[in-house]
Length: 309
Ligand SMILES: Cc1cc2nc3c(=O)[nH]c(=O)nc-3n(C[C@H](O)[C@H](O)[C@H](O)COP(=O)(O)O)c2cc1C
Image (tube, rainbow, N blue to C red; front, side, top):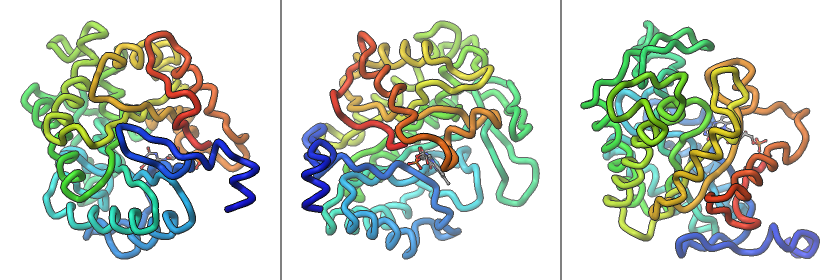
């Protein structure tokens, strides 16, 4: 890496966030590997991420994991709502740390973006309101307030399990049209209770999750949000709406970073940006991250973590 460090001094310089040191700015973003099986985190997934750490990544973010039983969107998702997930994350954290990398892991609820059920039948799906999903043809049931409260606690409990496993940080998915993006979106969230209506009401679930996580994990764990800078879909969150959301979350003391991606799972056009084809140019998402960084009220980290694409 000697030559690389000379040619790319910024990329290879360390970075500290909430006291957690990354050895460089190379980040492996959360991605479902397809390796996880019915047993959850297995030997192959640990080997996969050990290789990334040994290869020199500064930060590895582990793929989406369900924070609540209602968040099971594919058969073999990691079930982080169960205590028996802790041992697997401990193995991943050890594999990363032994090779000099830092480990974060994602906290996830798909809302109405449900791909398949455990037994192949039409999957039950919960969302802020009964607004159908275009891509998977799912009509969700509106979440009762008690379920909203349960899911919020699920995020905090899941983050605590990561903490107990020695994981350095957690990343809440507010991106790509999944549950929290559904709450943030006035075209998808038609609720009339305190979780819908005004912009501040639509933000409430995210704020309550941040508070619940911080209360459970303490001050040392990094807590970030992944958000789409533009969902690039007719009913999706626009770039302007996302900037207002990020600026509004700026006053959250417990929140450490935004990881900016684009697109949404909800439509075919929007979903392209979650899994961009090889023909997409390098750094095509950088302007979206730059816009969040530069927007008045957003706490940008100059030259900090941005999406790798
Ligand atoms: C197969 C696949 C699975 C993905 N799963 C996730 C995921 O679990 N969580 C997430 O935030 N992003 C996910 N993504 C998006 C990636 O994190 C990343 O933003 C995307 O691949 C673009 O970056 P790249 O060009 O470096 O691959 C996934 C992408 C792919 C291709």
